[in-house]
Length: 364
Image (tube, rainbow, N blue to C red; front, top):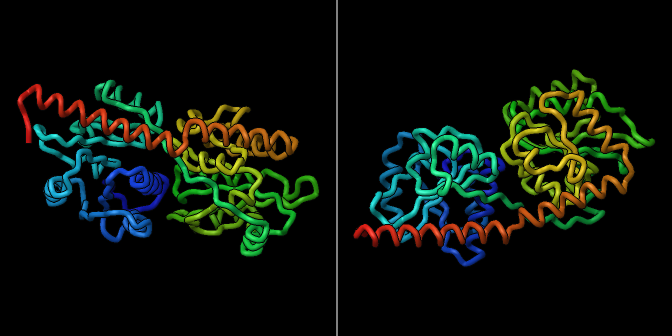
């Protein structure tokens, strides 16, 4: 269950996981807010879905209706995403249904998460945070994210994308992607890009930033102020960014805060070398100098240095960084491994809860 109104990385992973669980033979039903972007994505994927208002953390109707829904569906596990959905998930304490709260960030625990039966963090740092907040360590589980396999693109696809963006065929492209909000650090990226030359090795250098959000106009204005309006391209929100990854030479994640960084995993699936700021998520994913390059958060000058470094090494070195990233995502963040971990956890928790109820003489 998820109560989100937006469709960022966490919301997209919710949809991917429901799809993957269904494909693995699990009877998975998504519970979403009606008319939300997540609900539309679930519908487009043809997945079973129920709706709740999830209007606020005090929405007693949704809390009551969820209990009824659990009984109607006969489910054994309810997995909630983020604070609102988790707070509203209150199952009978003596019942057989397990509540798993999944967190992809350092959210407030008190008043939102303590009543769950188990917790999943998508990074070691999140799991450590939950344990430090007083949740029982033995009930906190680390399961990461997976991303979709790379889209297949042709030279014709890339030429069409260049034409749409107004990029010359010989352009060297730095790519970034995300919501245009402050913590994503796109203003730092623009200031870093302004420090790079307009050409490298006789070829024009461009920055492509895909996304949307409340800071869109402000970021476009900053690009104009920095004199880079012609060198920065804004394709808007892109549901399938495969062609942009494939078109780029380097992917950059300039966030000031990032718990994991799904975009880093996505870039690696395309074999693209990554430059990222040293957020908790990026430092957990990226081995500096082996699978990518790290720069200090909020320091455009240092970010520019690392971008310059990766753009001026040999092609073979860039390809090696990208290949190492692809191996990392394949070995540790593959779809099959993550889905198997979730299914195994569900089975373990249901068995434990059934045994506990039998031992206490409970039921129902």
